[in-house]
Length: 181
Image (cartoon, rainbow, N blue to C red):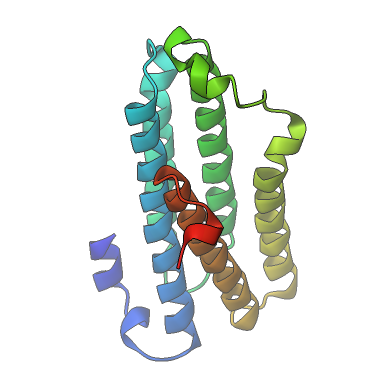
């Protein structure tokens, strides 16, 4: 990602394209951290016998991350939003399937005994995010807006990532929102 930042001129000039470029870079950086935290939590919190899928999927997500970095360029490319949506799909699928297998571990009965089985309602946040990314991409493509619309989309994504990351971190630490000062 560093070489991508250095090779394009946009981030070093202060204009709307620079702000959008830095927004893409920030979103991608937080995305990489979130995927790392997700995998770290699964590795530290669950023990299971990995299968072939568990060996392949991290490479699929890694390729998606490389594509996101590759799509950072002088002009905002809506394909970037679609690939970001595909990362959400992959990460949710990996997380759900891993937790479903971890639930089968008798040693995790105390934890999973308090957690209800996932239903379609549990996937609405991810479905909403992916749908929003696709609708945003289509809107940018249809309007050909390369300034304020991509900027608004990036700001919304950054706010979501920061809020999600904060909640995830508090839950890892066992804190509740009212305990945070």
